[in-house]
Every structure is written in structure tokens, then in C-alpha cells.
Image 1: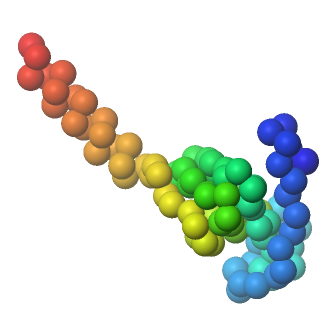
Image 2: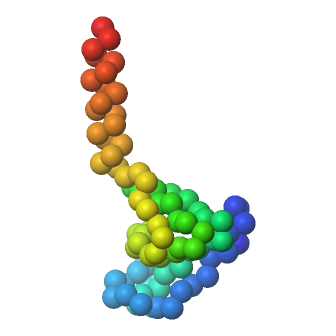
Amino acid sequence: MDASGRRWRAGAAHGRDPQFVRNVELPLGFHWDVSKRSGAKIETPMVVWKVDGHGYINVYADGRVRRGTACNQVWDEKRSESEDEADHRRSRQKF
């Protein structure tokens, strides 16, 4: 269980990408199926996902996320860059 009270259980192994944690290879397809009855927000350095209460998302040991059901990507690095540029343009127009 993590600090937010979420349980992380390994899902059925499916997938072909090898995963390594501290130079130890995990079984092919190893990942966590993440879900929560009331929904969840999953944040990674590059993407933020919103998972509805009846959905799930797969999280791999290297932090890669694979879309499951009833989930939406709500932020990504490219979106942040474009929003930052728009903010810069607006602030330059004020002066």
C-alpha cells in the first residue's frame, strides 16, 4: 500500500517489453494494474492520467504507462510546452 492508501498488485503478465529494476530483469510483461473504485490520478514525469472509478491503467516498473479502460491523458510534456509559450506571448503583449 502506498502513502495514499492505494494497493499495488501485479497484474497478469502480458506484454513483450523486458523490464529492469536495479539491473534485475523482471518477468516479461510484468506490470501493475492500477484502479480505484472512486477513480485515481496517476502522475509520471511526462504524463498525467485520470482513471475513472470503473477503469484501470497499467504501470510498468520503468514508469511507462499503458492505457487501460475508462482513462484519459489529462496532461503531457508537449501540452505544457505549448501552454508555457502561450503564457510568454501574453506577458510580452502586456509590455
